[in-house]
Length: 140
Image 1 (cartoon, rainbow, N blue to C red):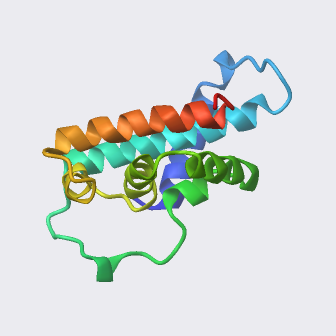
Image 2: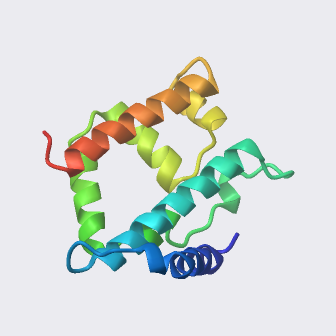
């Protein structure tokens, strides 16, 4: 799915639910849209992990353009993300970057992270993301 399609889907879904949206502060709609877009991107990653493409990708077929993460968040969020990422343990950084920025499958991550199974890699990513979330909120 193209990035524009994901953004378009997100905006359409938001417009459909706009009647029930009650902003609590300035910029609430923008925050809601940004969060919805991130969630939709995560859903796409999950779908792709469960339904792999028929042809195998390799490093020579990697897209040199911005990652979905870079397209989804603004400069301030990117700065907070990168600063929080730097405060994590190297293994957590590898798990997050591999999954979110490089789009590795859990099978690939299991090899990179030296985990025994794709399920163990998935758990490692989840735990790393929870630690990243704590860091981004300032919970050192």
